[in-house]
Image (tube, rainbow, N blue to C red):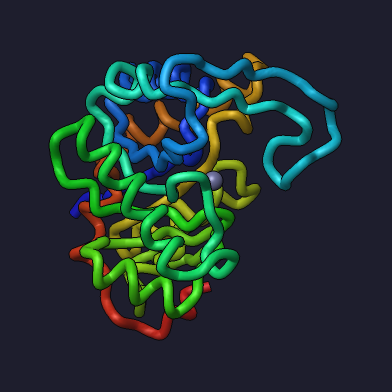
Length: 239
Ligand SMILES: [Zn+2]
């Protein structure tokens, strides 16, 4: 059986235009986790260096990601899956749970209205989750929630609403994890396209990763939702 390779990308940023073009070119599937409340209805943001090398978080290193706008969504993400990443990227536990689940649901309804299909996926803003918010996602019909932890066995998952991907796309041991994942039949990586900045060399090296996976006879692209039926209640200590 071929290994299912799935990927998801967070925050709905301008670099997703280049990313989705690249993924289409190589026949790769992907899910995009959006925060519609941080996107302007009409006006696209502008990516670029604000303060190079000085990270305002662990990922952007001072690069302003530049958000896509609502009008961009249907065309940029045509053919890909969309999922909720909370209306305005609200971290679980920082606001009352009743407000938080509304933020998770509002983003989901927004993308479902656009694509006219169920979007039961979720990615935890900043990887933060609580038992209470896990329970609320379940009650509201979400199928999975991606954390930012890592695992060697993505199917060893006691709680699909707090699923650990195998790794971030820039993980130094990406290919070791990829090879090891063949033993269990699923590999899940994630990232933000702004982490490729506007460096053509980084984009080229990323493209070679995608091409390698597309060409791998032991692997096939799948959507994140496709691996949910493969999850089994293990120890969750796949690492
Ligand atoms: Zn995010």
